[in-house]
Image 1 (cartoon, rainbow, N blue to C red):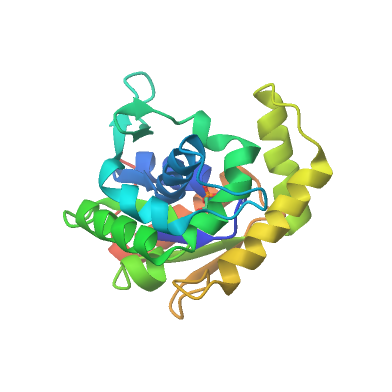
Image 2: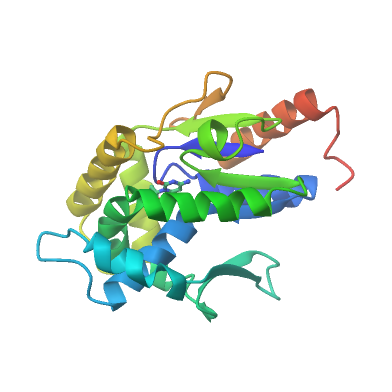
Length: 230
Ligand code: DC
């Protein structure tokens, strides 16, 4: 199942709950791009303008291993960089501000797309990202394109980060959301766009429960399977 859409529109929360309800494995592809970004930051590969040294990063690709490990308490996947759990470290505003430039690099996209396709070979996966329904799994049984207004998304991310104790300004987050929308939708390779056969879910005005019901109804329609016994 492919869940694509704009940043900070609650895709991952939604995809996680859906996967748990229908007994599928959840894969957060944004976390994979974030882990590569964290690697590049730690290696000092960004210049003062926030541009990565692509040639040096490409040479270091064999040294980057992105994987997932299940959290024993929540049973949710935690993203790992070279064996270290970096689930928290990849969610900072600093990583968010650098990730679009990394996600635009062809060799990064090729490597992660291949890895994602291998993960989906056995099916039974809910994958969230930007290009899952268009590039990674064009044959997905259900494709959902999620969106909400930039202000609503920035407000959600602001509450999420301040709840974790991070000191951030709403305006910076709104700017980051708008910049990422622009870069993600205008990059040459695998830009964020709605697949022709995707169902659109604008959740600006929906509660989590309403969204989940909508998703479960679509899942049942597409697969003929009911999630009620899971
Ligand atoms: O979903 P997220 O905000 O954690 O994603 C982080 C960044 O990674 C986002 O700016 C776009 C990029 N991304 C991508 O280009 N392709 C994906 N499949 C997933 C994320």
